[in-house]
Structure formats: structure tokens, C-alpha cells
Image (tube, rainbow, N blue to C red):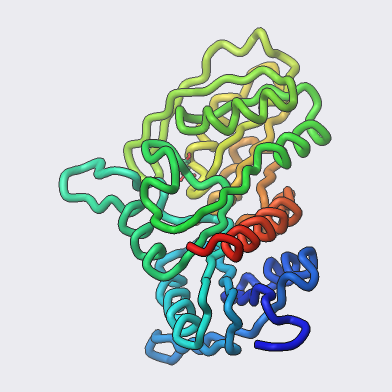
Length: 310
Ligand code: R5P
């Protein structure tokens, strides 16, 4: 490509990611140029992707909620961009799917995190995401063989908690949440505690709250990286009932809100529910925007990939 946009990153949005891609392009000015991508679904469920021809640098924007439906067209788009000449291809996936299945919990189970990482790594040179669920796998580099960059949501979440919640008590519902809860608690100078959770099935979760009298009058802020079925948070909300505390808030990085999750959180006593825009939040959920952080990281990773190609 010649002309004023030569060398710019061409940014393609998978369906549903157009606003996110537009916002990133608007923030990065001439370094990024939006390009067209069209997805046709045939009546039998197959899909056909068409893209505007790329330059040397290209990236797809696709947050990976509902990954099974998205991954085939995403990989079709990636392969097409390669065939049409993209020399370096990135993926901006604010929510990165499949990271929770990070080992075989039962004999014979797939380690989805590793398998999905291999699939994406085979098609992309770099990946930009927001706080992936790193637990038993402690770094994306252990499973992804591409260059990755992680945006951390702790600072924007801490700013939201500091400005919206008086006297917070941060509660992490399980051991995995400690890393996020500790960082936010430190930033807002609030007390924190982390619970033990037992999960017996997709919708069967239990946990026990300790004595909270030392924190009476505070506002419980339940903080986790992901709300999926909402059961992890709902069970904590239920056990907060009748305690001498202000009405609770739930804050998550990735609001997947599957099934009746949101209604359940409200019915279980959540006075406020907030999440980042890594996944488009449903109506009624307060939004913590990560646009600025994502744009900064996108500018950094594209510059680094150009200077030092993978
Ligand atoms: C798991 O460790 C995650 O951090 C979340 O706690 C979990 O994915 C939440 O799932 P659900 O909302 O279905 O209970």
C-alpha cells in the first residue's frame, strides 16, 4: 500500500467489535486505519468471510466471549489476511477464552487453555488481551507461542471503587481472585479478604464467610476476574444477608453474564454490578472503560512488532 496510510496498522473488527475497533482507531490517529470485514452466514450455519485487502501490518479485533461460534470465522479471516499479504498479523481479544481449563481436572479431559493457545498461535504473530485467567498457568508465554501484551484492569477498577464506593471491604470469592483483589485493595487502601470456594458443578458452588463484625458498616465489594454463571458471586451475596453491612457491589473484569447471571446477582442482593468493557456489558451494568489502556498497549505492541518483527 502506498500513500498517506502506508505503514499504518489496518484494524479489522469481527462482528460485534466495530465500536471497540473504531474507538481504538480514533485514539491512535494515523497509526491505525479501520478496514472492512464482512461475515456472511449461510442458512446451513457455515460462514463466509470477506476482507478489504490488508497492508503489511494488520490486526483483528475480536473479544472471545462465545468462542466456539467465533473461532472458525476468526481463523478464516486471519488466514485470508495472510493470503492477501499481511506480513504481521495481530489479535486484539480483550477477553481471552478458555484460560480457566488450565489442567485436566478429570482423567481424559482436554487442557483447553493449551489447545486453544496453540490454535491461535498458529494464525497470529501477536496478541493483546486484558487480564487473562492466569492461575496454574502463570504466564501466557507458557502456552502461547506468539508475542503477547496484557492490559491490567486493576488501576481502572480501583479508580471506580475509590470514586463510587464508600468504606469498601474487598472480598475475593476464591483463591484465584487473590491476585486481583490484593492489587485493587492496595490501590484504594481498603481491607480485603479472600474466601475458599468449592465448585461441584457448573451451577453448584459453595463458600463460607468468616466473622465480619470487625468491618460492620463497610460496603462489601465482591471482586473477581470473571462472572460467568454468576454462582460464585451469588453464593457470597447470599451469605452476606443479615450482616451489619451496607448493600454489596459486584465488580468483575470480564462480565460474561451467562444464563440468568445478572438477575441472580440482583436477586441475591447486589445493589450495584460493574464490569469493564472487555465484553460488551448488558444494560444496567456499570461500565469501567479500558479504551485508553488498550489503545496505549496497541500502539506499543504494533511499534515493537514493526521494530523487531516476530
Ligand atoms: C474461576 O476461577 C473464575 O475466576 C471465576 O470465579 C469463575 O469463572 C466464575 O464462574 P461463575 O460465574 O460461573 O461462578
